[in-house]
Length: 146
View 1 (cartoon, one colour):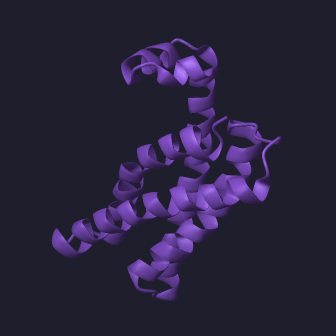
View 2: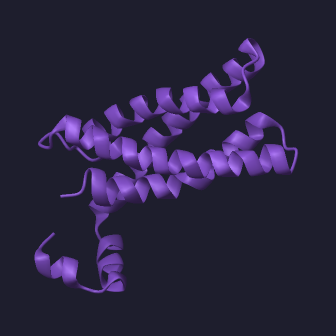
View 3: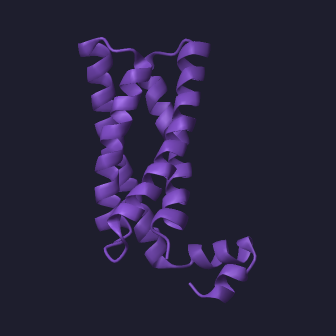
């Protein structure tokens, strides 16, 4: 992306971006990685809540940490193919984006479980789905962006 592209209004950049087939392929890869992280997150969360008897907030934290490690590796190497960037630098940015999305996840989880009385696992599923767009945009534009 050139400096002129970055100076263009957002609507022009978005219009240009949606016309690029490579961006759609990247989005599909991100969704596949996200699906694997979603499964990892819910499996760990469910095991900790229902087998171990952990508090749902602590279970959400543990599930997040394991899923974020899974997602970083797959997104770096497969989705964004960011092999030229410094892994530690990208990892720190990935963690910042992930923590931001996780904070949103916890707010939604608490509202659904604590406020509305929804069961923990369906509430966690909805909370993850709510935080996903924050994660994609942050990682595409900042963590792995050129």
